[in-house]
Image 1 (tube, rainbow, N blue to C red):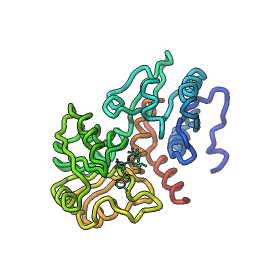
Image 2: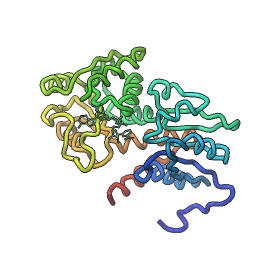
Image 3: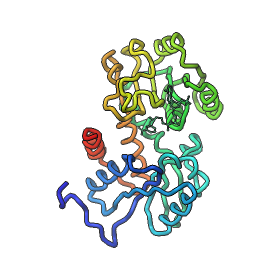
Image 4: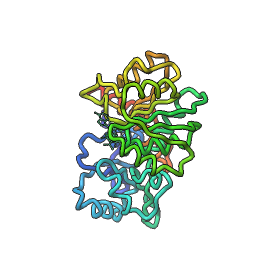
Length: 291
Ligand code: NAP
């Protein structure tokens, strides 16, 4: 990076922050600083790593000091829910907050922009009618996926999880969603039939994540041209699941698109800016390429 690309930090510079622990591997500082540089905004985005005991003090201290907005990451996405003044519908639906916006009166609103990330991926897939979805996983990312899928034309969703009781809990928590949900176990024959019937596969398990990038959450031979894929995993790029989907003639979007989508939505809530997606993508792709 050349020195003229680095905005000078002055007394007028605004601050955005991310809270998580550990924080060293977070990708949000990369994408948000890239978007802020592209917009020539006099704002920097910096990481903080409070202990759980100090989370509230850190959040309130940053806001009192003028922090214009915050990103919340693992393990604090649920711990921060009771610390904000208002919850957006996305945070209520998922029970988790990954974005905190600060208004003029220092009132805090919590959002879950992972929902926007999934929606951005869905809308980037070729437009065609899709009725049946298959969701792998039942953790935090899965909840964001269910909230997003409920806002698409998908009518029926099957949640498959290694621990079936967690899938049942997600199903119960989304009982009011505009979606028929059922659950299934990771059993080979059932997975094959579910994949054959589905129009969309969303992977929110960590299967296929670096360094086990060759692993697949479903057998590769179940991929077919009608089964488009959204994969939460961002490393390796592309994931094997996405590559197998593309090889089978389907479309696929991976975790990088999801990260960019959640970041674009967060930037809008914090600053009103339409973030430069291409700058975000370049920053994250170059960074992951160096790993
Ligand atoms: P989480 O709450 O810990 O959930 C992990 C999920 O993966 C659970 O459903 C778990 O099943 C399943 N799982 C883990 N190992 C498995 C295995 N060997 N076989 C089958 N299932 C397995 O984590 P999360 O926050 O939902 O995140 C899940 C993944 O999504 C991570 O890789 C994370 O990096 C990624 N993610 C990406 C983005 C993005 O912006 N791209 C955003 C959020 C998350 P059990 O319930 O049985 O343990």
